[in-house]
Amino acid sequence: MTAAPPRALQERLRDTRARLDGDVDLWVATSHPRDGVHLIPLSFLWDGTAFLISTPYASVTARNLRADGRVRLSLGPTRDVVVVEGAAEPVEDLDVGVGDAFAERTGFDPRKEDDRYQYFRIVPRRIQAWREANELRGRDLMRDGRWLG
Image 1 (cartoon, rainbow, N blue to C red):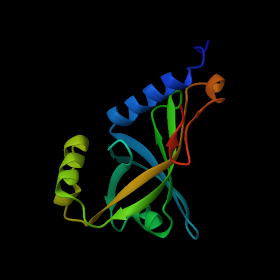
Image 2: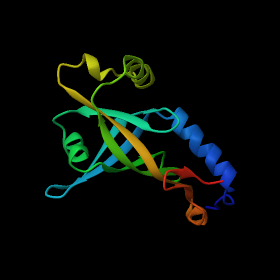
Image 3: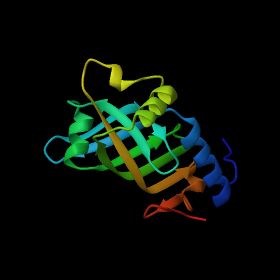
Image 4: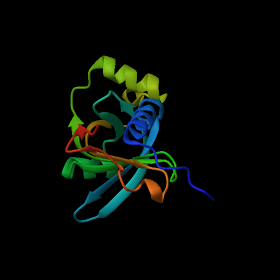
């Protein structure tokens, strides 16, 4: 298999922003000092600056994020991946319009579930994107919460 030439920064930024705006699901990796790591797929809403996710309040993911807000997210297939390191904060008073936007975007409205759900806002601190090994150099698109380029 012959890999395409590596994308320039501006192309990677454009492709990554399109994925953030277009995808609905991502992988969420959390950890707990006693219980270790946990990985789960969840739907999300991207508002241009942060991700909004929701998971049952009693879930391992919610517990982990309340204990330690550090989180890693992954979008896309392994040969066109976006990896995000961020900080999650519980959303206690969800704006109705934001809740409606989340439900419309994801096709799922946690507010209508019998179980209690917790929303989290995740602000990215680092974003990387690559397709093949030839794109590992230059994979950083955001550092310290600031887009490069």
